[in-house]
Image 1 (spheres, helix red, strand yellow):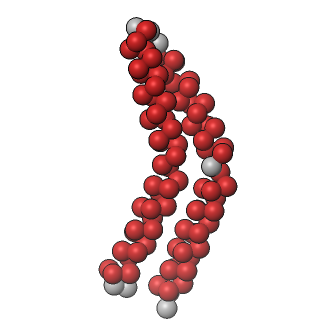
Image 2: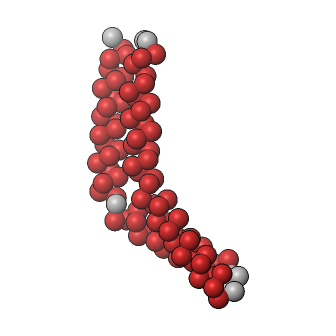
Image 3: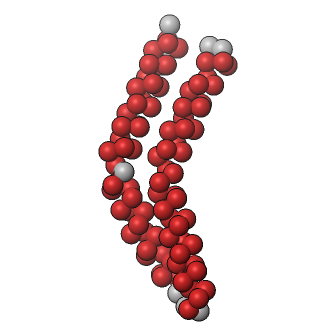
Amino acid sequence: MFYEQFIPIARETLMSTLLLVGPALGAALVIGLVVGVFQAATSINEATLAFVPKLLVVFAILALSAPFMMSTMTGFFQLIFAEIGKVAR
């Protein structure tokens, strides 16, 4: 198998990974910034104040984006299995 055949697979892998983790990481980043600004403004240095809201928001984002994530993973695995079939020939 030539190396040129792996480039589209690697590209699709990276794009699928970004699409799957992007919403959860973006939400965690925004909530972390908001809580950090709140902690700096009020001088409250409590670790759980930063952790619990991030945990709840990331869980909610994952629950809301589950159908999108499943369809993305299904399409990716169909592509991978189709490529495996080409390698065996």
